[in-house]
Length: 101
Image (cartoon, rainbow, N blue to C red; front, side, top):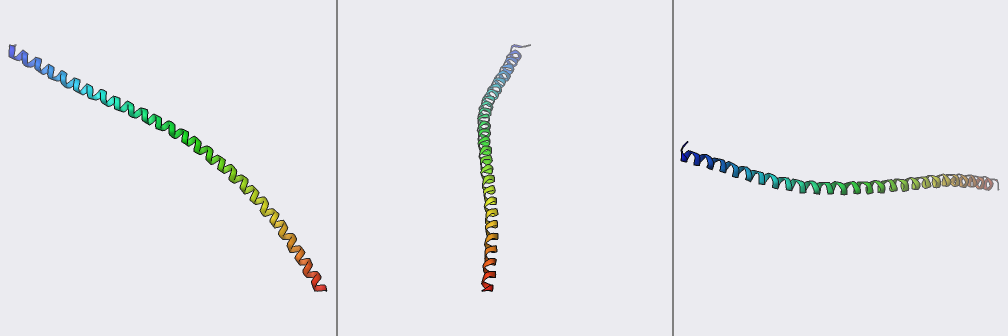
């Protein structure tokens, strides 16, 4: 092998080594960005999980309050129905007594 051929071989190896190191640096930079994105995503998932838990508790609380309100309304309607029946009966009695007079 001539001196020139050896020089070209060394240059070829050095060029490939430089390319490899450049690609390795790019890969490391990409891995660092990916790691940062993963950290941010993890934080966002944790925040969403907390918010979901709070929302679920809020919905449960509202459902319980709505259930209590519905029960109170049912009881009120029943009481009004009974009172209306009594009122109707009294009116009927008054009408019967007025008709006799």
